[in-house]
Length: 207
Image (cartoon, rainbow, N blue to C red; front, side, top):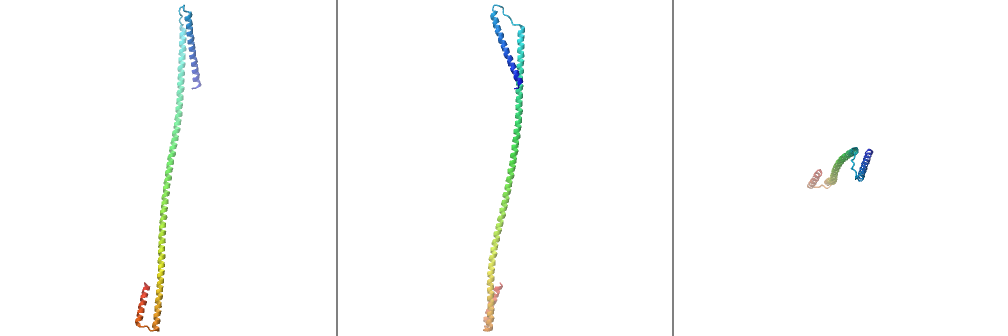
C-alpha cells in the first residue's frame, strides 16, 4: 500500500471519529435540552442541520468507497506483480529443467559412445588374442616339424653311417676276394658264394 492510500485511510478515519464525536455531542445536547425543556415544548431540529449531517455522511461514504477502491486496486496490482514474478520464475525454472534434460541426454550419448568404444576395444583385444593364439599354434607346429626334421636328419645320418660301414665292408670283401683269388687260389664255388654276397650287399646299398 503506497503513501497516498495511507493518507486517505487516515483522513477517512479522522472524519469517522469526528462524526462520531459530533453525534455524541448532539446526543448530549439533546439530553440536556430534554432535561432543561421538560416544561417547554420540545424543539425540533432545524432542516438545515439534518441536511448538513446528511451531506457529511454522503461525503464520508464516498471517501470510504474511494478508499476501498484504492485498496482493492493496490491489492490487484500487487497480485498482478506477484503473478508476473511467478511467471518469470516459472520460465527460469523451465529453462533450467530444459538445460538439465539436455545435459542428461548429452551424458547418455557420451556414455553410449564410451560403451561402444569399450566394446570395440574388447573386440580388438579378442582379435589380437586370437592372432596370438594362432601364432602360438603355428610356432608349436613349426617346433614340432623342426623336431621331426631333426629326428629324420639324425636317422638319415645314422643310416648313412650304416651304409658307409656296409660299403666299406663290401670294399673290404672285394679286396679280400681278389687277394685270396690271386694268392691262395680259392675254389670257383667259394668264389661264387662270395660274389653273390657282394652283389646282395651292393643291392642293399643301392636301396
